[in-house]
Amino acid sequence: MVKHIFFGLICLIVLSCGEKPSGKQDKTSLHKYGIPVSVMLPADVGIKKTSSGNVLAVAIRNDSGYNMLVLMGVANYSSVQKAKFQQREQIVNNPAFLKIVEDYEDGFLFEWQGNDRIMYDFRHIKIVGDKEIVFQAGNTCECSEDDVRKMLASVKS
Image 1 (cartoon, one colour):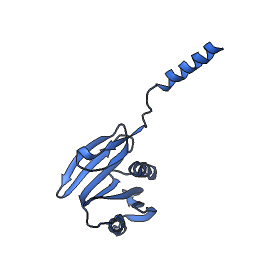
Image 2 (cartoon, helix red, strand yellow):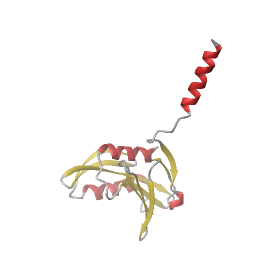
Image 3 (cartoon, one colour):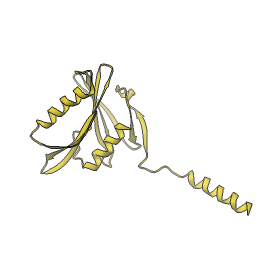
Image 4 (cartoon, helix red, strand yellow):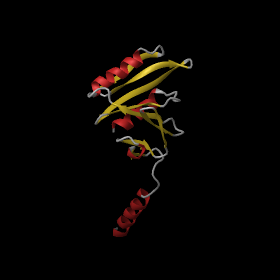
């Protein structure tokens, strides 16, 4: 009896030491790319830093639909709510905008018309010191609502 219990425990330990699932997410610091935040990212993403004028951009992508852009510039507002309002006004006034799907204190998820189909995007805003950090779907992302929800969850973690 004791041998069976011991054998069962050994089997459980060996089985629990298997490979990690490919969908695993890790907390990743973007500090080395110049952006002072950490986000939960899929293990298989590629991260590329670019800049345009006063805006620092970091593109985060993989081949499974994760396609996010993180932008950082000087904060025009001291509160997330005011920065969110500015972002929302820009989106709502775009002719491709269809509707706000969900609204959050620090951002929103929205629907837009592009390439003859409905797509989704989001904005999530953080103010860190005198910097405004905006998370959104990547410029080349023809995102489904599910893709956007996964990206949004990774920055809210």
